[in-house]
Image (cartoon, rainbow, N blue to C red; front, top):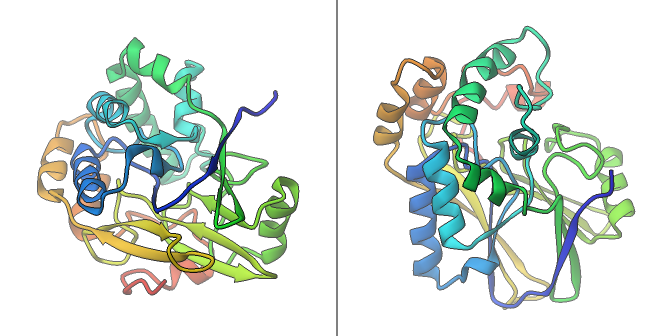
Length: 275
């Protein structure tokens, strides 16, 4: 199937990058407040996908995102929802804890999302491209080749390089893995802004996003922590329909399990993130 790629041209000023809202309405509302305080227009706010996910307010989150007017690509969850599929398409190992938990949160999300929200998800592209100070940027979810690929900082540069070569990009903005990082090599830059819907397995309740600023050459990359009303998010998840372990992660900042993580990232559990 042909990919839908939107090129939004040259971007000036600050660009807010984020991923994995995961139905966390409180985190999204906090991020919108940041964008307003920084003077960043909605069209310069770009999500790497998975607006819907583990938390308790999928419909409210989509509608708030839509009203805000920010941009997003399709994550695997959006693809599955718009295609009326019965699983999240996260590429979890069958029978794993993540897979078993997805059989709770995904049906819950699917049951709550309205036709209007599904119609909105159908408008989202597979990828967004733009230029910032003459550097070509491509926004992807997992990888350009597979929306559900898990790519981490420790993932080989060869794997990352194929994405740059195919898209002819200088910068890749990615999501899906849930951990913020940047990797520079061969004059290229891979950025994962992290996610705002869940903590980054570092023992902290804050979540992560990135602001690009083109007032310096070629541009600055600023990883930032986002504080939000995580107590309310946890309380909303105590509905008997969602995994209790994910609700606990909201409070502890520690993932229930590390099945998707390579050895290098597993060793960083509970440690402060240095980007």
